[in-house]
Length: 296
Image (cartoon, rainbow, N blue to C red; front, side, top):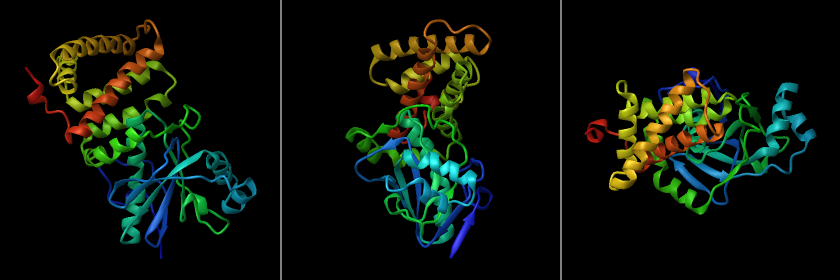
């Protein structure tokens, strides 16, 4: 039995992505990924495993026979050489499998947000990457190529892998929270925009979303961030409070039309690193910041 599904047919985690065609049969499928490499498998949750992948055995003629038209061929030709990892997704039924495969987009965003990289999920296969052949059902599931040449791929270190094993499950649970969703989206996608001002606006929208601040924004965001990230170190907390105030004022000047002073790339990267610390801290704490406990 083969089931084809788009986002409107599936039970999702609150936010809808652009419709992605999913085709599944049996009890497993594979989403091919670029942007991240690893050496050992990592379980990311029930029915989803992150695995190494390689497609070096495929050549242009192989791909031409496996795609339906020139558009699919062009995407496959561009993406296949960049595949370095894959999700192995399993389910008890075709519908459950399709739902898990579609929701794996969130895992791409989460991984990208946490490790400062672009993970693209353009292709689905019914067999592992190393076994793809002319008999394989290879499907284009994401036509968006944003970030495909933006940055270098990232190899997971042993420390990265252990962090995922210890904390990734809680991050997946937190994706149900709208504030965490916004933070992850902002962090995973801000660098796709060429304008520094837009990048800053996106990053800070993610930071603000985690705290739900709507008044005295500069003071409260600075205070809550410092207390959340440095709960037991008064000296570091004071330094971070001052840093966040400086960064937020820089953001405010930029989005209201003022020229960004100094190193533009640093002006964007500093708040992005701050948001990444916040997202990872949430995963480690198994919860979003509780404003009541952070207020004076």
